[in-house]
Each structure stands twice: as C-alpha cells, then as structure tokens.
Image: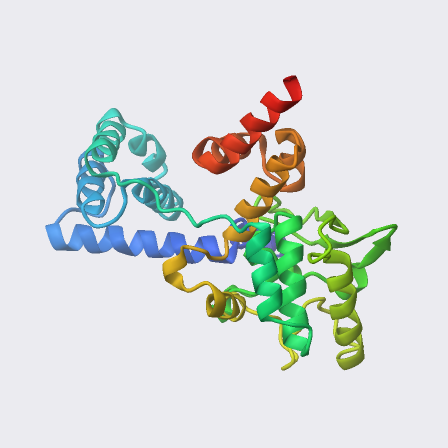
Amino acid sequence: MEHLVHARAVALGHALDRSTQISYSSHLQSYLTFCKIHNFPIEPTADTLSFYTVFMCHHIKPDSVDSYLSGICNQLEHLYPNVRTIRKAPLVTRTLAGCKRLLNTPPCRKQPLALEHLARLLNHFPPSSHDNLLFRSILLSGFFALHRLGELTWPDKVELRSWRKVIKRASVSFYTGAYGYVLPTSKSDATFQSATIIIEEGENDSIQPLTTFKEYLRSRDHIFPFHSALWITTSGAVPTRAWFLAKLRTVFPTSSNIGGHSLRSGGATHFAIVGWPDDRIQALGRWSSDAFKIYIRKHPVVLQALLNNRVVQQL
C-alpha cells in the first residue's frame, strides 16, 4: 500500500506539464492576492469568482482570464471539490462574457514568414560557421514542417527544460529527396507518443531544406559526434528560444512583428498558397481538428490563400 500511494503521488504530480503547473500556480497566487486585498474568504463562491473576473479583466485581456479561472479550479479542486461547478455558474460565465464584450481588444498576431523572408535570412547568415548552419537548418525545418519554435529549441527558463522533449540525433533518417527525424512530443501530444517528421527538398533553388540540413549535420557530427541532441550550438548546448530569436531580430527587429510563431503560420500560409488542401496542412502541422479550424478562422491570410486555391481548382 505504501508503494502504491507513492507511485500514485508521482503519477498525479506529472498529470500536467511543468510549464502548465507553473502557470496554474501563478493563477492561484493572483486569486489569493485578490481575496486578501478585498477581504474575501478564499473558499470560492459564484460571487467571489465573478468579482475576481471583473477585477482581472481590467488588468489583463479577458480571454486570458478564462485560463486563469481554469488554473484556479485545478489548484483548489482538492480543497473545494465543487469549485468547477461554481466556475460554470451563470453569474461567473455571464460576467466573463460581458467583460469580453466590453474590454476585449483585437489580437496582435505575428506576421507569417514568406519565402522572400527566408531568402533574406539565409543571405544574412551564410554557411560560414556552425551556429549559422544551425540557425539556417532550424529556420527551414521549422518553416517546412510547421514546427512550433518550442519543439526545436529549449525554453529560456531552466526549470522548464526537459531532455524528454529534445529531438535526438539518432532519430534522423534520410529518404529520396527528403530527410526526417522523430519529434518526441508536441503541444497536442502530452503523452509522448511522438511523431515522425519528413521534410522534402524545396523547389526553390535558393531555399533547399535538405541541402541545408546536410551541411549542418556534417558540422554537428564533426564537432559533437557523441552528443545525443540533434540541435547543438557551438558551445555544446541545446539552442534556446532566446538564442534563435536574437538571430531572427538582427534582420527583423521587434517592430517588424515577426517572431517565433511566424515560422508556423508562415509555413501554413505557404502550403495553402501552393495548393495544399486544409486537411493535409492540418496533418503536417499536427493540429487537432478543432484547433485547426480555429487557427484557419483566426488567420485571414491563411484563410484567403485556401479560398483562392479552391476557386482556381474549381475553374
């Protein structure tokens, strides 16, 4: 029994990803601070949660308050088992709906990268050093495989890093005119079932993912033949998000509205423009069906490209 209790405690501790746990703890702290400021009891009620919703919506985006409430429910559920029922009470849900109508602002999304952006970056970072080869390879792999930047780099916060999420050198395979590797996990794969990523050589003479990847791999295997990770900087460390963005911003500063998510949205836009159906883009990007529909609906550039393609095919 003692062993079972211990094993169950370990399993419960890993029910959420580390980054989610930290976010939920932060959400709980904001709720506790709110209760302390206003002399409310900590035990959740419909009144307390609705007041908290109004208070937070005047400090952060109302859409974010929804996730804050979810985090509070997760953290307090073991103390107050009915907290999720209270969270769904009409007073709370209607208060949040009203705040979204009154206080929501238009979303500010990153501009998708285009082929001309890739060419500009490749010209700025010629294959003259190992770090340049690494950046070039991550750039093209992220674009043509619709990667989230977090799948190719480590988080900036040390406590969020996990070797289980690092792509391994041993997983690399080559095919006729393509290369691939195993992605250990993704945002939609919380149980580490993994996915095999295959990237074909591009049709653009100046943008060749396979050639770029082979150049990087030769440099990597020469310098770090025994390192397990696929992506390695000159210092021998897995590249971080900040490392990649620092290089990206030497060409496209923050004011250009191009960032880490530009890889994923840019790749989706590119494949929509060249004629891929949305279900194929969905499979390549490893989206769940509902998430992909929301992505298409909320990104007019991708939606317009898909619509234009379908019109051309019908003609």
